[in-house]
Image (cartoon, rainbow over all chains, first blue to last red; front, side, top):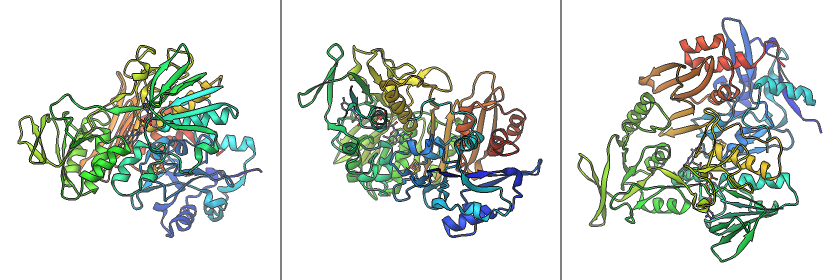
Length: 160
Length: 416
Ligand SMILES: Cc1cc2nc3c(=O)[nH]c(=O)nc-3n(C[C@H](O)[C@H](O)[C@H](O)COP(=O)(O)OP(=O)(O)OC[C@H]3O[C@@H](n4cnc5c(N)ncnc54)[C@H](O)[C@@H]3O)c2cc1C
Ligand code: SF4
């Protein structure tokens, strides 16, 4: 089965933050961009906006580093999901992820990251310009997507 | 193929699982000297806080996890290795033979050579057995001394504070976490703890510990002694290398090459016990941290399974620490490099601090206090050896713009 992945094109982003609102509402029950798992970064000088979130990379640094198996692979979507009940809040995953997409939430004492909303990502639904889409990830597209987030995987060649 | 792995911490467990993935037919035996199911030492503080049961520290949650993977799990102490016969001997008298052996025996806490350190009220915080002693002996209203404010000491500190004990921390060096954070952030950390009601005595030595009317008396240099119920010693750790004695090359840990192979070609070492490659320096050192244990375990297994192209490019030394709500992190060469540049932003009123270390226009190390969002990009920039170009100058002016610098260098203008 072909997995889908989030495809982000910053060129199309106008910085309206609908994605952040949708994400925080879906996952935290509030319309509050500060609680969103996708983040739109603004480059003021260049007038450029860059939506940014987890690419669900194969390497899964966060999942491998977790000491209590609180991050698991979602076989249906390929996402790496936090099991809240197991997470002890040690934050090792937040420093292990070289993309910086796992964040500590001091209110809950646990970490949060994108889980593709279980296969129906609300950010993509909400984006009015098509800057965020959820599409079939053919091998090359997915590869490019991941290269996009980090250039090389230098810690070791062979993942487990 | 017969593989034996000694040690059921993260390095050993990840190695066993990785071997199974690569070698469906191999005979894999995982041996640990502790009676519990394989667990994670670093989850112990959360057990002390009462957030999780002992079972919450288990590395793998499914009850038959190892059996399902056809990995034989033995709870035995390994006494010796016979390299010529390629066998090991167990506490129960059994001998097992191997084709490839992995030593993932971890490290253990050390105690300073002072009188009284062997009294029953002096405990370490390293195993679940230790945790049970602390849970029995450190409760609301108890007076407790914590010796050592290093990384492990600081993690326990938070747990003890949550248990409601009257806590005094005694640290020999002039600041907290001296091997993880610089002067400035270590000082802020101390100030923060004091503001939360924990007494922190830095540059203070314990002379000895004696017993008096059921209490422990901790004698300090140049200060009044402390009378307490429990002393927790977190002054240092040492690699468990006994099995390597006279057999393998060792230094602070067992020496390994880029394949995690020791001086004996059929014996590998991983995790806290191994002196492995450091990404930042290119040299070899012991990195007693969870992420390195996992990286070592996986790579050692790939090499044991005959993996061709699995050379270790080195692990990045990194830590994150939550000290009563103040979060600190360190990466790589946070002390800086000769001829390099650094940029710091200090906001002591808000307990915010960030220090970036550059070599040329690449980030090589960082310290941060109070940073919780996107902190992983610091690792990303170091590991990718990203050329920051003009962003280096922007970071020199404002080191908090780290995420922008990362995106500017890693996300092309036109998307994927
Ligand atoms: C309280 C505490 C908090 C920590 N917090 C953090 C943290 O926040 N972040 C972080 O990165 N790291 C942390 N660490 C460090 C981290 O736990 C270790 O780096 C990690 O456990 C190393 O894994 P390992 O598999 O190499 O060794 P270990 O986990 O020590 O496992 C070694 C295993 O080998 C067994 N063994 C040893 N000798 C023998 C023998 N002769 N025969 C049979 N079995 C044997 C031991 O019983 C044990 O099961 C913490 C450690 C402690 C104690
Ligand atoms: S913070 Fe939670 S999910 Fe992350 S490594 Fe620690 S226990 Fe695992």
